[in-house]
Amino acid sequence: MTEDRSQKKFGTSNMNKFNISRNEVGIRVSSSDEFMFAWDDGTKETFIRVSLHGAKALGETFKSFGYEEEEGSIKFVEGLSF
Image (tube, rainbow, N blue to C red; front, side, top):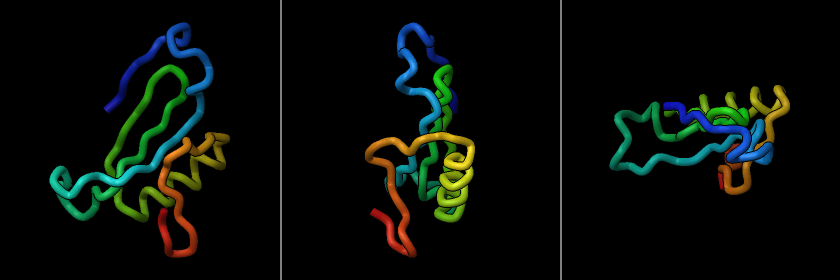
């Protein structure tokens, strides 16, 4: 799912950010969509359902692209998440 946004309306503070959140049990279709990965490039925000491994891999990849992790995003530390 994507949401288009105007640069003038939102400014540049939302540019190049990503967020990992956990989907509620009631809205999960399968175990492979336990997490939601969202990224914002300043013009649109995109959301995809992903597995644990997908969320971790996408987070690392987006960091290498220069994206910043939003405050409140789930952080993974050596087998732990918080």
